[in-house]
Image 1 (spheres, rainbow, N blue to C red):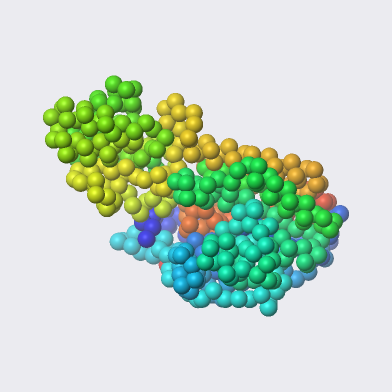
Image 2: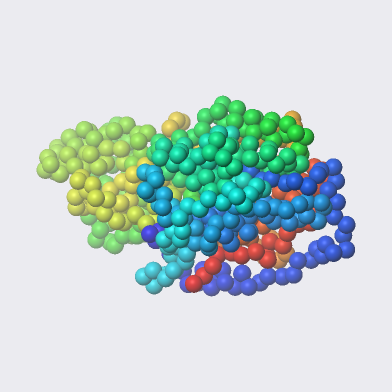
Length: 506
């Protein structure tokens, strides 16, 4: 369970801001909507979870209805667009009850919902609502967004093969509506002879690495591989003469999943501060100062203490710590345990990004055989594992900095995307810049309502901290529409962002 608490004051502010909807001032009834040089008669949308309408940690029907491609398609209908079908989930909870018997993957949970936990509001996952359903017969579908897809997955023939669940080569969300076990997402798009497409893909090529704290379980896609796959996608989608719009990738530093839990959330009472400074961190600082590593640890206070984390990029000072503590009179067994625990530990800095989900483990017992008192609290006296923090630059580090690796890959991907947009004459949406605007305190304002990237109270991000609310997807839809109009001379009207849903309160 994610123990992300929302104060009653913040909740009241959120409810107030959501009640301040104003009328959309652009009445399109008296405007002749035209397509310009584009042809919207057959629009298809390709992408990942952001394209599918995924939100609150799950794919569910109401979220899909408020997907940005569905909003765009509705505006395109005013200029000759046709039916836009989506592979809707069978319920408003999401998840699959029957994946576990088929694969080693865990059961896909249902959506997060705000509930009162220990007197405070917190996002709580729900049980999955139905078995994996097969809906190919209802297609073809024009929303081809597949949660979890990376850029190369859209080209992979077999990404929708049920047999691939056992090996992890297939995706259950695509299995639901793939036209055949050997189909690829881009093949299913081209089979519809699209006249216009949108493509927003590549986030997962860095996001998976980021949301696992760079622990190595989900590596960053090499830039060369990304470029090859993305180029193949664009060449295929434009091969029949279709025009389109593509969006680039936001920096992970702009989304609340990495900006909600502070690096220094640990309050301590005076007695504990004195004990830890005298018996733990004071001696460690002194011992490591001989090798120039004394800055790994800070002197604790009664408020705003940084989290203790494991930094695998640092030299392991286990032996030095053990020997130094023994020389200072610490019993050998205890000194040895402390050497193991603190050998690659350091206190977090503002450059480190603590994951939203890490809030559920801070201060809990880690269950390690080395976590003996007083080393038995995650993030306080026992280092948070690599998977809980995306490490930033520490002191003079120039390599193995996880945040920098992610930002560098994102920049390289975005250079490829912009280059292809220019060379193919496609409309381009700078999603990275827009998310950067939302991440600022000033945010953006639509028709009198302010939106930011602040978790829950900002209005644009859902309870998982990665995916958007209906209003957030409305912001994205409008940016795509602006890019289309600017490039092709169309005048598709913008959507009323304030008319869509935000975070639902109990």
